[in-house]
Amino acid sequence: MTELNIPATVENIPAVTEFVDEQLEKLDCPMKAQAQIDIAIDELFGNIAQYAYNPETGPATVRVEVQKDPMAVVITFIDHGIPYDPLKQADPDITLSAEERGIGGLGIFMVKKTMDEITYQYINGQNILTIKKNL
Image (cartoon, rainbow, N blue to C red):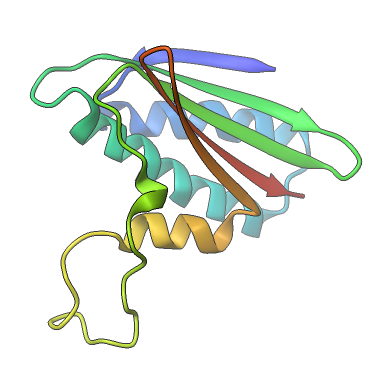
């Protein structure tokens, strides 16, 4: 397991992505899976940066674990911001046009569709969001 502790700011999304990608490259992660994970990082860490501590800035931890048999990567995002479970958000109605659809929710919907598992917990004052991608 490797871990990155970093301020939860939008400017740090590239650093988080690079940190995770370094771990994925060691696993010879397929390019499609890496692209899906990178999009998930952008969405999830971006949400933490924008909303967890708003208007302040606070710390975030990104943890990368590798599971074997079957091979999978598990990425956990931890922050001490306001409790928020993005999985309780209703999925957007993608049959509607962009004008008819409400704002928000599309990013987490994409994460749900591209990851093999996604879980949320609020424990000891921490938001803990975990995604798993089978490789």
